[in-house]
Length: 228
Length: 160
Image 1: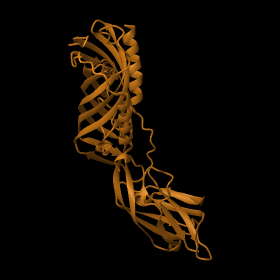
Image 2 (image 1 turned 120 degrees about the vertical axis):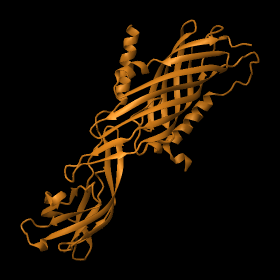
Image 3 (image 1 turned 180 degrees about the vertical axis):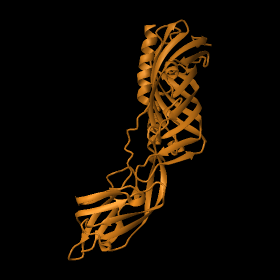
Image 4 (image 1 turned 90 degrees about the horizontal axis):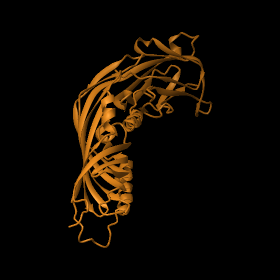
């Protein structure tokens, strides 16, 4: 039934795994001020590839803020375009995406205002995909070749991500961080007829699971001590 | 500067691995048919056809020589809902009684393979009939014809 879909099964297991990591501290810090420090960043890893690659581009920004002592809430958003042009298919796609999620940090602060940390996290991603009309050709030396058109279609894509990474402060309020991501598409049937060549924020549109990484450069502002 | 070059190299390698630009999936979609024969007790048993020939294709210009085989393969037409193939059980015998016509009706489905490979046509065999000169009957073992090449779809049962 519900758990027969292998992607949903992976997603549920990921939620359980991260849920265990997100055990909330029993003792509540009454002086803690949530959403007092905000970081805004850009995924640098996408830029050189997008500039060098003729078949796809993707750009991504991140905004995050402290929620609890060891939990950050964040949103990542971006856009991208891709094109497939070979002897078998010709079409384009573009998409905008948004990811919501939380990160759970591991280490205690070594000094007041210390924001270097490693983390695991969970993301829910959704994307609005616009796929153009596609032309296809099937080559058959015996019965003859056939060609056809697939109608233009707009699709919503949903996926879940399990992530891990770290962030370090290079200079005051300037951070960099790696994030590795395991992703599972929740609604792969939406792309059954023809997936986008590349889905910005996710990866290859014709794969139900994907692996990716981000390299963020972030700037932080606000009360870094996160106290009232 | 060194950092930026390293970043560019790592991301380029990573993302180039994500892009499949060459079609690596097998694109052959064929129907596989095996031979069988009724024995003296009228039981159907797998058999081998020796010295036969199967004609198919537009204007029947293609053929498979069956020197000594237990099965043969042929493609269905992605442009039609039915085809005919002609089975000659003995290439030295050109009499009409040595030739059988097999008519196959099927439905077609466009199946997406990958961005690099595009589409293929998959089929669902609905009906098979034969003229019954040398072939007793044709059974549909598996109606779904896809790019899975290991499946046997038809079984041609020859007369005793």
